[in-house]
Length: 375
Image (cartoon, rainbow, N blue to C red; front, side, top):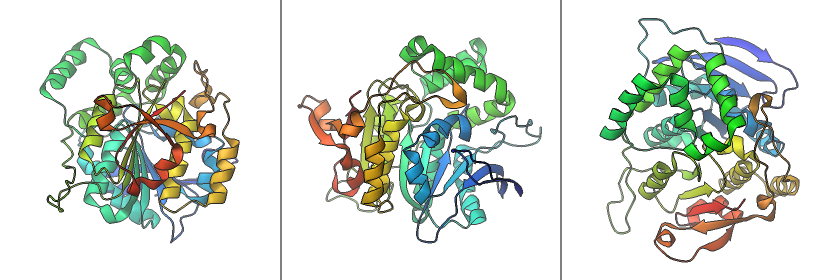
């Protein structure tokens, strides 16, 4: 069902078509920007719990350097049932889908918009959903950019802790703890307060609670790192994958664990220094830089476009979504094109080495690495 077509001059949603797409597990609110082309994939985004497409991705897609990317690739934002702004409460008899079912709802979205393949961009719960989608439908996914992905089911201790917090914490408190690390909560007051207000004032608390419960009940992703000379039919992600996490994120250990389970020839781990739980909000210029090299590595951005993007990378502060004040400033390390790379073996004691950010564009030729962005 088409709701409206937005022909305004918004940077984030130029000429956007908004629809509720019917799927076997409920209607998904989708926003399609740009015109799909037969020979190019579409960037498909999926947000984290407590967020929607605006609060999760607006800062990133509003960044000036993202405009060269979206000129070449359309974007389809997908929101889980009832997670859009000012959403009405879901019907009492509605059974909220599991995250596995949400991943199985995505083929209906692609069919609705006539999309042949996608580059997935997900955060937290959205990253898990897109990873599950890629596992089950590898022919539909060209690449994945997964921020704060947790491939594991909730452990016993986590389950007990969540039951305790259900009694002692409000839903916004639990979501803030999910989105941000303790250091960030204590020091980055403006950013955390902005998201606390957004969760409280614009999100339907009942709907968010159901999505959060669904995510907490996730199963472990059935992936296994291929071993040279071993079983070539192990279940793993077939596409090139970029894992992103801030070094102050509560998801650091989970993302590193995910990296250890994926094909090292197709996976790169980008660990961003001086960055918290939402890298795409906290440091959009650097995430854009990584994203553009990743897409170029897939063959969908020309060298000329990359040069224009690189030349415009600046150290200016980028405003948070919904015009919130910022407490951190951005630097221009990506303009210099350098990151600190540290492989899993190096974490055990070897010396760090410097590599250029262009390594993100050649995942199929690289071994898995953890990249520390110097800020």
